[in-house]
Length: 533
Image 1 (cartoon, rainbow, N blue to C red):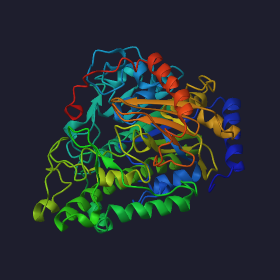
Image 2: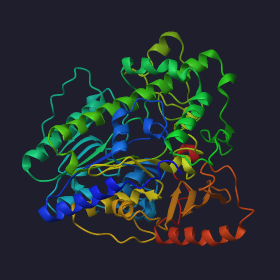
Image 3: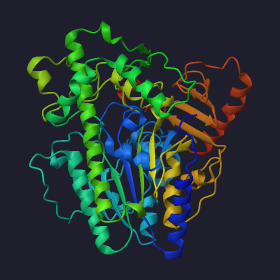
Image 4: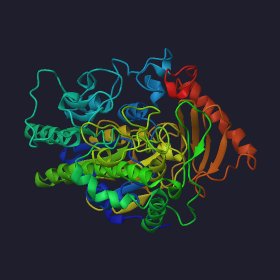
């Protein structure tokens, strides 16, 4: 198993850092960075061709997790991340529409504790720059001193009026750039918040929740142009190149094979269709699709550059080695809704861009998505996408940097519910037991360097799954259970349901008991969204 080497320097640094904090009572700063709809293999350190040197360096200096899981959708993931529970328990089993069921109220309760409020109670200054999306209108009511960003997804990256500053009496920053771009603006506020926390002499927590690379696909043209030729070779070849690099980096085990192309589930239909071969597309369609992926890549690179600005500020101020840095994504890449992507708004409408329209893609007047063909590349080599509980929807990058040393790939199963206990343990507020159905302290688990027997659970829009160590039981909405051994088949290509019926019989009650105990059941009959009709 490549890169699965216990790094003694890293473990000693962990122990030394924790001991030093206890002796000196110096609480660390905490930087939690979350990307939006970033695929499993998009970053360079996970096999991608997109330029992400700053995140690659964080991975080299820390721990890169290969088996880390989200909930498969933005609202539920952000709830699990900030609250440390499965999202249905706090009413966010779906999105922000109230479905009149306990697990699906579309908002977190008014008195809900978050990482922000827990850290604030022990003297931290708490800041949020980016996306909230927990169904309520004011993050400062949930433990954050300052907020700048969006309450839901970004509808545009170009319009400053789309971004809010809370509390309402706060002055807006005078941004350095003449042309507003959301990712850059979030970073300006993040740096300002960090400076405020530094001047207070108290520790700070910054939740930096970028909107990128969530649609609409929008980016400055100079960034887009460097990727157009890259993606003209097509999604099949790019997927193969990523897979080879992932094998070289040790992201995947030697026994993993690159399997079939994932199907897509189009708008308003339950019948899956195969993504087409790149060679079967017309030249005009190839140009349109190459431009979409080039914009997506540009958005990821710009996000990485901005993360680099934040890390450099930590270095300049001498704070980096006393700052826990965590990076992840809220779910896998977004395939909505077919291989060609949509335009104008999320839905079935696609525009084939030609000539001048092609050149304007990504500008202020446009609105695009990347489509299922490129989303399948972003999730290489995993199956399916955001919305689903197959690996492409829920397995996401996680990079954790704490103290000096690192350069390790960690294959332990982790989940977003682990972020809160990890952060709180480092802060010194609480210790969290390693229980099978609860979040764990990832740093403690890494330090102990042992395999942890875990059972993780998933549900979204009727898609459902349970992972018990290497075994995974998973089903599409209204479909039968499938069984996979993730140790030998992380691409979920060989359904073992008929071979191991006893394993299915043993695992189904696990999911059912969890679903009953965590407000997953009863499920909504109507999710009040067109695409599930």
